[in-house]
Image (cartoon, rainbow, N blue to C red; front, side):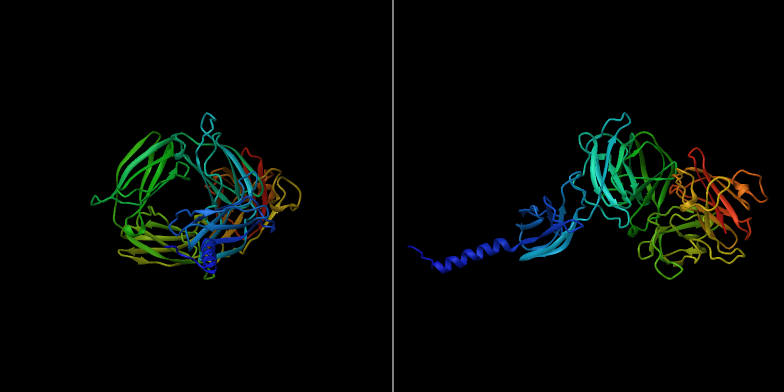
Length: 508
């Protein structure tokens, strides 16, 4: 038997078929920050589970336009728009999240922001290039990943990345290289094309072990942190225990303080192994974590606004021994939560990077025997103790380094080639506290403080001059409390030995 289909009905079926095939699609135009169309942009899509979509026509044409079919059908998806890889382009990858695709969805203009070129080469001790090092870039202000076309170093160890023109962290994960090498993380603030040159990946040691509770049960998802002999946290990929409590990581050979921080919900006190020699492959054995209780709360600025990046420290009230805490900084909302053993403590809230001389919000003799809420508020003056002494507020006037001369024409009054920043001057109840920034991490510095300029610059000394040799912290900041100086104007000279960097300031 023959089945006849009316011509009009057949046409309707065909149109319905075409409609269904084109219904799940996205359209739009990819443009630069100046609005110019970007050709050759590759489009990737993912579902809510992170599974890659099958896309047809997944690129832009010569004018930046695209019509991309989503072969997986309707749904809510995330799309990424990858401009041509550097050096052909330094535009940043664009993202559209939670895109509802049920019919043809017009995304309008999708803007790929302007970036700068970041290049370099990963090498070993012998200056041999290291291929297949996994690359990732973290945006400094947001902490979000900056997506890249290139995710591993080339066969020649090289890489070319497009990054924002502000602070970023470049992570080089050497565990994928096939060599036992330490990984590295570099923080940079490129304002234009930046060539990092050779990045040395030091010889590594494999560190293994097992984390458990006092009853012998495994601790899964425990985070390991490694602080080297200089007190700097080292980037170590894959530094969490697996389901059975085991861990295996590679660190640059050296001596470390190893910190173990369990998930907050496990209520286990943070554990530290100090002065741990990891100059060869090492099994740390069973690391036992004791039960603890949660201390939580929020910290405010003096204005009442939430205080982010505030460090929470706990000290044994009787011995003043510092208690190790993990994840001990407030978040963007000023909230924190840590776990520590039961006991009596002195709790300190201090803006991250500030020095003890500058003061803090202290809570003394806090008894913690169960879950405890403790809120804090930072003082009004600088980072430190509220001003209540006789010293008036002081300003910093930069002067030309060396004898003679008046105020410098440029910011800082630095000697040629100096990298010193103007100091931060903060008053506490009983002391004048100085911060001198812009130094290298752990760089030595000489600070001379006196009541005349001649005293601090090597001329005939005046009464009450003081010279102190200090070493900067990991942030390149040196700090000094000056309780013996009164309200008179002071002069500060900062000198970095061997670097030729110096500056003189008037504190008034």
